[in-house]
Length: 494
Image (cartoon, rainbow, N blue to C red; front, top):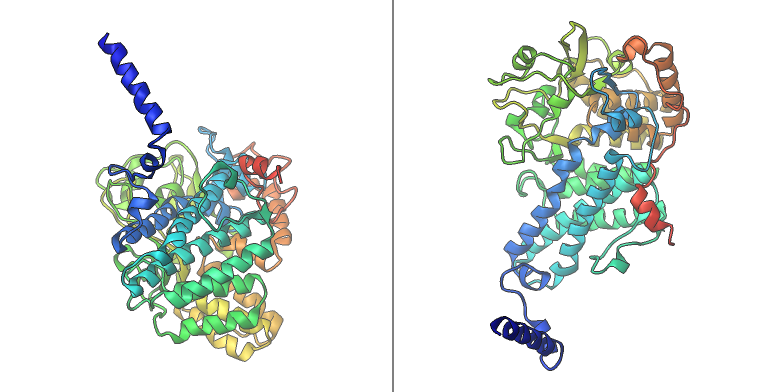
C-alpha cells in the first residue's frame, strides 16, 4: 500500500508539473548545476569560460606535427616492423587521405570545440556587467581563438560549416558548408576586432592572446589571400609595437625556462607534472626502438624506460637536413642523433628536448607564432610588392642570428626563393612547412618529387629492407584533407 501511495504521489507531481504549475516550474534555475542562466554573470565566470577555450589547444598541438610536418618533405617516420599499429600517421605522411582517419578527425573536432566555447562566450559577454577593460580583453581572446581555429580548418579542410552562435538543438548542429572565401571573411573580421580589444604583450598576462598575436594572425591570413599590401601594414604594426625582439640565442627561444619570452608572439602552454598539463613531444620524436639507458642519457630523467613499441614520428628527412647551410647554428639546436636498439643512428627533432625529471612528462610549450616569423612574413610581403630593398634587412636579421652571412639575392625571384628556404630551416618542426607549400603553390611539385625520391631510395627514408611504399602513396597530392566521415554525412543533407 505504501509503495502504491508513493507511485500515486509521484504521478500527481508529474501531472502538476505539466499543467497548472508548468510555466513557473520550468523557469526555476537549478541551484546545483551550472547553466548559461546561472553561470555567465560575473567577470570570474567569463574568465573561467575563456580559460576553457584555451584548454583544447594542448590536445590539438600534441600531434599537430603529423599534418603540419610529416605531411611535407620536412619529416617522415621510422618504420617499426615489430609494431604496425600506426597506419593513420603513415597514411597522412604518404598522402593516403581517408575521411575516417582519427588524426585529421581530431583536428577537425577539436577546432570546433574551441569555436563552440568561443561562441558561448561571445553570445553573452556584451550583456554582462563588469569592468569594461576586462570584458574587452576576454572578448578579444575569444575572438582571437575562434579566428585561429577557423584559420586551421579552412587551410586544412577547405569548405567547412561556419558556426557563429551557440548550438542549442540538433537542428542547428548541421550547417551547409561555407565557401573558403566566406570563412576567410569571418576570420579577418574576428582578428581585426580582437586586435582592437586585446592589450599588448607588456600588459597582458603571459601566455594569453595579445593585440600582437591577433595582428600576426591577420598578417598570416592576408599572406594566404595574397593581399600583400594589407599584410605589410599590419605586420609593420607588430614590429613597431616594440613588444617583440629576436633573442640573441636561437636555443633560448624554445627553452622552458624562458617561456613566453620576448620573441614569443603566441605559444600553447604546457606545465610539467602529473596533473594532465604536461607535454611529451620528445617521446614521440626519439628513435624507436630505443633503450632505457639511451632515453636516460638524452632526457636526464631518473626513471627512464625503453621506447620499444610504436614508431618514431616527425623524423627529419635527408632533404631537410641538407637544407641547412654550413655553420648554421640552428641545425645543432633543431636536430640531434641517437642510436636505436640495433645500433642504427637516426636523426630526431631536438628542438623540444630539454632536461626534465619525470619520464614522459615535459615542460615544453609549443610555438605557434614567433617574432622571427613576423619578420619573414613581412619580408615576403614586401618582396611580392617589389620592395626588395626593404625586405633584405629583415631576412638578414634572421640569418645573422643563425651565424650566416647576409643574403646575396637582390631580385624579386631570387629573394622569394631565399625567404622560402629561410622559413624552412628557421621554422622547422613548428608545423609550418605543409601550409607554406600550399600557400606558395609548390605543394604538388615538391611532394610529388619527394615521393619519387622515397621510392628510389627507401632506406634513406628509414624504411627497412624489403619495405617499399604502397602503390597509392604520393599518387595524388590533394591540397586539403577530406571532411571527417561523420561531417560529410551531415553535409550531404544540404
